Length: 232
Image (cartoon, rainbow, N blue to C red; front, top):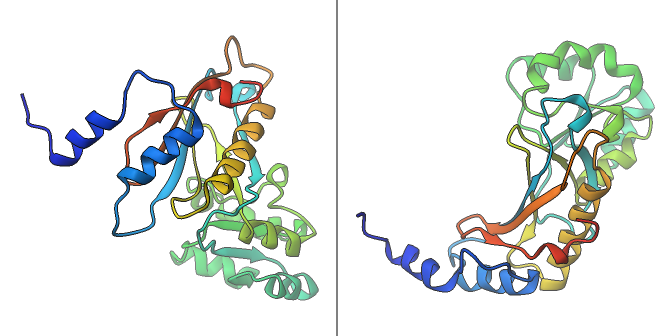
């Protein structure tokens, strides 16, 4: 039998794998066990009763985290003329049209969000095979294809995050940094879980939210009491 590392022993002693923790208690544990070398991201995993291979069971959406994410979000915008200037004024990192398309085709895809004005979708459509697999393809349902590119940039920079169920029926999303105040992380947790519950697809059968766990970049996964989530 392999020996446990010192940190694994500490985790085994402090985290009860069978217990359902309240949010504050789980967060306190993560902070107690946190690395002192960097500010870890707090992450939520939600196991859902869906099979995303079926279109009517896909769960995807956007949510604005009231306390922000603690991350610097890099945004590219496809727009021309006045819309391009609006995007720049709102804080977009890169704005362009055909030139931006060519830049991305050359491999420059280091962005967290790609936004487009509707008239630019003819250009953006040619990047489908590049942006699609990275989850960066602008989508009107997510508000990333919009005539109001300035607001979309502000939302992206201000704490709006996308959630999308993975093949295994799990949603992973960061809700801030361990250095955040507890009440700010709880507000972000509530905003995310409320949004996922509201996004329940028509094809979901049986129990929708089956398990929720809280973790940090280097921390253990801690099971959260389902009564912490409204509508779960």
